[in-house]
Each structure stands twice: as structure tokens, then as C-alpha cells.
Image (cartoon, rainbow, N blue to C red; front, side):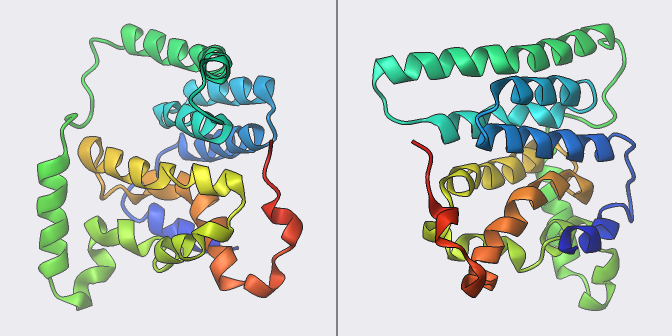
Length: 215
């Protein structure tokens, strides 16, 4: 319900037709990683790649969740599994990029200086106008949930602990290469930020079995 409630904040300035399918495939891929469903993960990645390049960040979660140690006999299978499950998605994106190579990107690749400048301008503006401060919406969309997600980090299940590393990487990547004012870009993180925050907000409702970690 919280996710549904914040979604209107994401399309006040931008509405992208790929977002619904992106959210579905992103969630399915996260589920498949947690359930160790390799075929399902590869399929979700491939279908998602047909729609949105954001999917290409998920192999990071796959590697982090399945990492056990630095021994060669565990790293090699992990590398091989990561390769064959993500290769179809990366191949699809490469083909699409080649076919559309003559079409200019709507925004430049390097957005960091402009993002910081516009965020600073919105921050220094009157709070009465923050309802339209689109470059602050990255903070507003989840509000204090951004903080709550990490306050009980040690109590999180292994999947959320390791998938949580995606959150800062995801935000920083969009800060450098995306228009951070298009806050819809942050919606996929809701599938991690919101459940992570529940371990702080609702400690009495936690089941000890939730903390069982995969072997």
C-alpha cells in the first residue's frame, strides 16, 4: 500500500510507458534470485531487457547474494552462472543499441554537474515551493523510509542485507548518468527499501524464521 501511495510522486513530471513492465520484471528477477531459480531469473532479465536497460544492474544482486568466499572452486561456478543467466539480457540490449545507433539519446550521458546544481537550487528555494522541487523528489518519494531501511540492517534476512548494497549504487549511478529529477527512476528500489524498513518499523511482527540464511 505504501508503494502504491508514493507512485503518484513519480509521474508528476514524467510518465514513461516502460515503467509498469520494468517494475514487474525487476520484482520477478529479485524473487528468482532469492529463490535460486536460475531459469526464472534469466527469463525475467531477458524480458526486462527488451523493455528497459535498468535490468542490467541486477547481476550485482545475483553475485552478492550467491557469494560465499573467495575460493576458486566457488568463484568459478558463480562466475559461470552469472554469465549464462545475464548474457541474454546484455545481448538484447547490445542488439537494440546497435539497431538504434543513429538515434540520439534524449539526454547526455554525463548528468552529475547539472543534477547537483539543480538539487542545490531546489534545496535553497523556499520550502513552500518544494511541492514542485522535482530534483528533491529523490528524497521525498520514500521519505524517512530511506533511513529506516538501514537502521536494523543486522536483523535483515541475508537476501535483503546483500541486495541492500544495490541501493546506494543505483542512486549514485542515476545521479551520474540519469536525470535525477525523473524520480520514477527510483521506483524499482521500493521493492528493497520498503521491506527493509519494516524490520525497524514493525519489530514485534517479525518471525524468527525470516532470518534463516541460505547455505
